[in-house]
Length: 555
Image 1 (cartoon, rainbow, N blue to C red):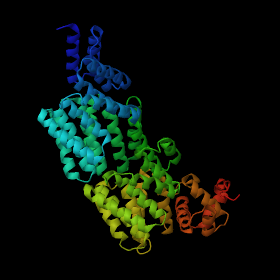
Image 2: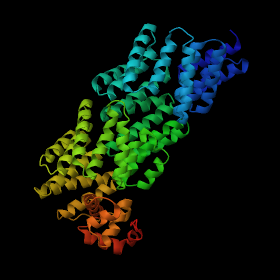
Image 3: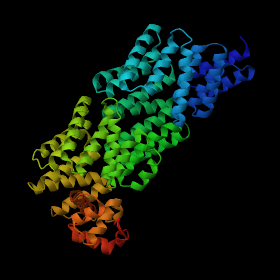
Image 4: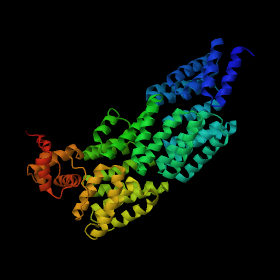
């Protein structure tokens, strides 16, 4: 055996043991003696795990060219497919991804069907096929993998088949496939570390889509331990992103902020294209925290990305820009090729927007769609969310059975009693009971206030304190600041202070009197005042800056 081959063998042995630094040194030595695609390929893989992504791409590109020169077209095709996905993960460059997939397809047409061509098909489908197409290609790939005896490929395809099944609403079947893929990945059947990490990531994505918070927390812990043991920064960052989303849902916002910030930092050092997902989750958290300016900065320039639409619409709603929020959400829902679980957050927010626009009929239709999808998941959390939405629609319509929906939501949230959603359900229950059972309303409102204060949901704290004041119960002083108001609410407060009526304000701002009434109600809650006179006094005495803007377009 020649010297370059000895170092090559040593490098491949180090790769199999997750000794990334050792593999890097051995492959570099092999290349010193002879330029060969096998060493470039191994070095690229080692560098990828060491989070030196640009160098990893350089060496795997060299391997691609080397294999082509050797006429090893199957290996060149699979590297081209790998590089295609990396264009998005690294740079968010879909155009470059398409180019690399085109090269892989051209090479495939020159070879007979083989295990490498099966890999190429599933790698491309994982990035470019909608859930229905992905499930079809994944099923074909599973059969091919079994015929070739490639357990790495089988687990990889099974994971994506499971994910596609989950998001299409067949949660039990999809999760069963994912569990089987995870068993293969953790039992030693799968030996390729990239495949193992991919199965982890896909499983966490499926848990998030299905609202399976318990399963997600358990697997996040396993994945984080695996990432630390094998020095996998990519997987660690992805876990932090998913875990940050989980912590946000559970109401552990401080921890969520830390997890998401660390994920952003990790992706910034490597797969920069993936950092946007952590950015969007942090932006969504910022809106809930009332930090609207920070959320806007995080979302700036990403208005064309589907993953940004929920936080973007939530930001519009928080600012009183209901029509913009409706347009963003409607566009996202209409562009979907089929109904999937990915639509649940969009529908939940759209129902809230339609209620803000006083379109109860449309909100009711959206709530029905949300409930249908939520029931497919079997997730207590998503079923509770859907029940809460239906309750808000019924309450807005003046129906007495709204209380039943809020009660159902609270019952399904027993495992998530400290979450923001649980606080919202308690608040709505208090809102529904304030006329028929003031004492009960006060008890629910106090419970909601405790949740919102602990989490740090400043806007909800002010709104709940306002409800308690209406019930004649004093609360400790909350934040009385116009910074809590959206730009539109600040404009309306200024006009209230000038003595304008709701119809006059509506005419001035080109909105309906009913919409003005909703805005005024929110202003009173946020400022913790009882009526328009107190709000006007606040504007004139405590914060006269709200009068500095003249929203009259005629002047």
